[in-house]
Length: 145
Image (cartoon, rainbow, N blue to C red; front, side, top):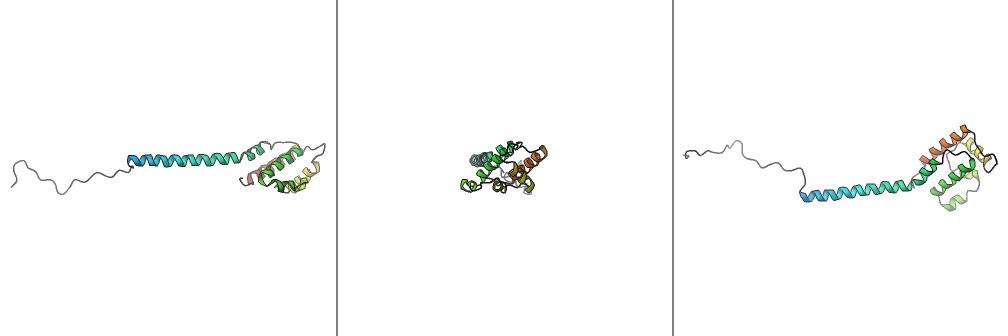
């Protein structure tokens, strides 16, 4: 028999250990912090390198509201020099050969070739807007360098 005041533990509900923690150990936090900071640094470096490499595209888009055909041709040649080697671009002597590398309509190419290096090399506002729109689309379609 049991002595007075002695109680038996309840066997139906045994004492269980505490639940495991979902958080890593203190050393794990440091390792996780280093890994996350390296991933963040790598992401920042990739995006900043892409931003710097696409500087030519941003500068070309700033030059889009130009008015003279000569300015358009200078911009097109500079963009082509970014995309192709100097030896390749130097073989395109005529404006027809340069404009063939763009996605301009044939009618706009003819008008630009006719007015290139002429005293009156200004396009009317409607044609100028068409050239700007098509060159913007061409710039956006070019691959990243």
